Image 1 (cartoon, rainbow, N blue to C red):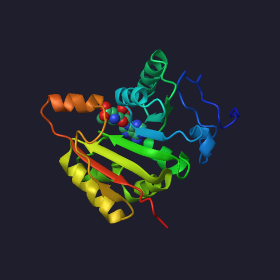
Image 2 (image 1 turned 90 degrees about the vertical axis):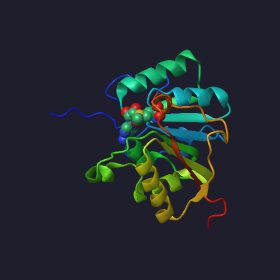
Image 3 (image 1 turned 60 degrees about the horizontal axis):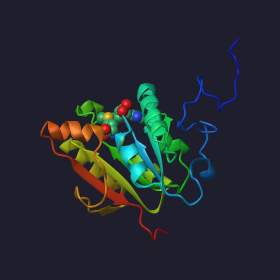
Image 4 (image 1 turned 45 degrees about the vertical axis):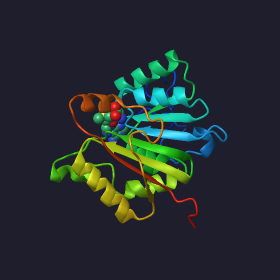
Amino acid sequence: MIPTQPLNVLPRPALAGEFVPVDYFRKMERAEVCRGDRPLEVDLGCGDGSFLMEMAREFPERDFLGVERLLGRVRKVCKKATRRRLENARVLRLDSRYVVEWLLPEASVSRLHLLCPDPWPKLRHNRRRIVQQAFLEAVRSALVPGGEFLFMTDHEEYFHWAVAKVRDFGKFELLDWTEDSFFYPKTDFQIQWEAEGKSMFRLRCCNPLNEA
Ligand SMILES: C[S@@+](CC[C@H](N)C(=O)[O-])C[C@H]1O[C@@H](n2cnc3c(N)ncnc32)[C@H](O)[C@@H]1O
């Protein structure tokens, strides 16, 4: 007989600093993930969490949610956040697309970061890229008015693909983003790739403020 358990229970103890949704099978209530009026930023595929930690340290008045599918990486990021007493950084172990399309409440996220995602370079694998129309629609819905989507890659072809997808989508405004535009710590992969002489390509866009 299959044992039954409530939907909200993890098959392991939750880690300190881990974010566990009340229910994995419905959109979260705003109050589940947002603390009052504090802006929420989401880092999809947060990896070793170095970007997340730097941001949480620099902006104690904001909250940060890392999303990462690999449990080992989630453990490391939780440990870092706990050791550094960064109560404004939490990590959710789940698939990024699922989180954006099915869990994040409407108008809850002020900035959504997608940094150095897998480029799926082979043509037949392009459909596995996270930047697709349904994903962009879900990003738009999760962002607050004026909220931003920031995408960075070393893969030029994926960058142009993402720009074309955003243009086709048509509901975002493209914004300037040069390396020194604002405080933006380098990610772990960015550091590795730049050390190999690679360049980074940046795409920044926002949900218009005056949307009907
Ligand atoms: C190339 S690394 C980049 C990590 C970090 N953003 C950085 O720039 O250093 C991609 C990360 O995204 C995670 N990842 C890939 N696909 C994912 C998905 N669908 N959902 C959640 N995490 C994912 C990987 O496990 C990995 O940690």
